[in-house]
Length: 402
Image (cartoon, rainbow, N blue to C red; front, side, top):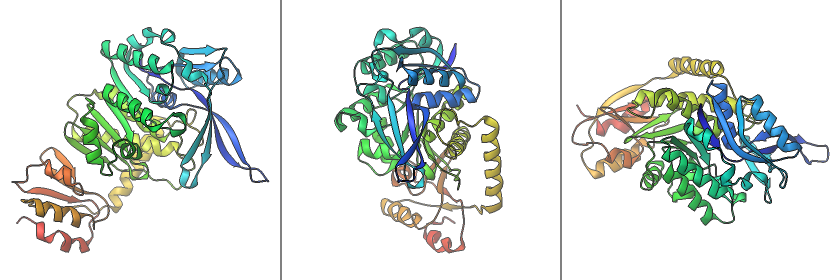
């Protein structure tokens, strides 16, 4: 019995690690693949995990099999293929810790996974089935992935999906979007990055983008990662913001999104997916953001995942700093017309940091016009400014309800 079973790519990441004397980049080999990164983090947190995928029966493939076993992931569903080579990825570090990817995958063992090679026993015995879009790029793995998802749904498992879009692996953008929309339509839990929302929907506003996703998905929980700006959770009409844990030691963002995804899945495994409160979602985002922050200070991902003690320590330190620095103020405001809402959103843009509107159990970003229109504006709302400055008094004065 496993908590999470994931299907997808497992490859060798050659991560840029400085340059030689002649200026050519030097690379360090690390095991990689988004689904396994997710499993590695969950295993680090004490959950039982298993991987389904294929590698070549070569030195790279054997190294990968040993690596996932060492990180606590069951390799029961890992298939070795003597006819194709293990897929390789070259990860070039960019300024600020971001990355650029190039792949040696022609075809590559991971996309040669066939339907009959998938362990239904593993899926039957899990609680959550997780997958990404990279196993949907080519046949036979594309069909195998869809059959595995269908089987998991029939077996009543929670389905988790992370697009993890990598442009070089797709024949064209249309096929990539088609595959991502399939995953979004099939999942119960979606983790998606801010740039992926814009790429997929063409919308810059996160609220509008998530609304477009919901029109084609029955996902109960949608988590949006915003990089150094934190994250958002959308659940049952509510939106909750998760603040980032910024570090001046960030050297490599590889695996940060996967670490976040694992943190959120760990929360769901512990608390379920029904009747979650705002405080629950805040706890989930805080933990996932902290875990992702730690992994950016280390090279690679699979073998660099933090444990719960490290994450809790970072969260505790962050709360102490916030308590020392934050000057939060709350006001009662009235927004009774379309024009007033438009003016309010425009004015809130002048305020730095988080500005929230509270109406009963709902918490809305005060800079989001769509979020505000989802509230009952016939009654006063509570405006909370997280980092109050006296200069903001003139900005909010005309909206105050006394």
